[in-house]
Image (cartoon, rainbow, N blue to C red; front, top):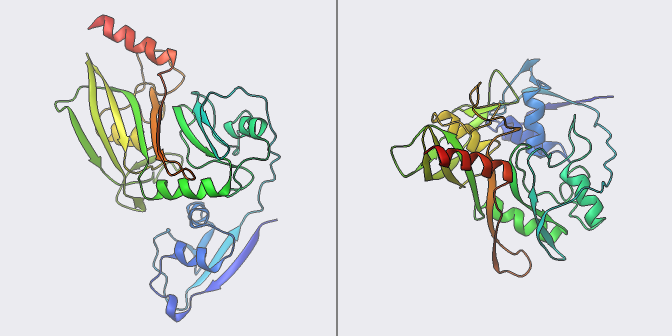
Length: 307
């Protein structure tokens, strides 16, 4: 059964964003959770749907409908893990293309979390709840590469703070369509939910968050470019959206890319190849890298042979 809460805006709350107000008024709900309910049309003011940046007024009658949480039994699964680094506090895992990071509607098993539960047992941080134990950040299902995993809450808190401060080193290798006249550059364009397709993100100045991607051309391969992208921020689909917006969609990207591709690929050629951070307990800088997957190397080999 869903639950509906009714809130009247007090005089000293006038002018607040509605998502911030509701997250402060309703215990146990994060601001991102509130924003999702708003996106789903479950929050109304005087029976009218609003956006997350709506500034409330004194006396506004707010209704918020909270659906009954889906009960999911997340079970350990004996799935091989490519562990780049592990100690008693954390792991660095190399996720393959095609693997979902954590359970969600439509993907309740065969996720990275299922594999981590089998490998680590109960030794995973519980800060992000039962569906995302140990998970600090994500990469898309069809993106491969390095992820940080926290085994304890202290490690989780320390690493999460670095993510929040944008002090982590996160570098990706991408093969994109088209050539660049410059050797490097920075894309500083805000990203938000697509107004027509809520599963997609887009460059927009409405209901958005700042997003900054630095890129460097590594190789020019005919009508393609092999580039390095370094994240300053970590928004959903950031590199994919930024590159597509600039006219350089990532090869194999079925959501933001071209309709017809030269290569038969299962997903985008985007690999999180480098991650650097200060160890949350040892306080030492650590950096790890991973090789490109074989299918990615094969495409580069084909293109190099042609050039």
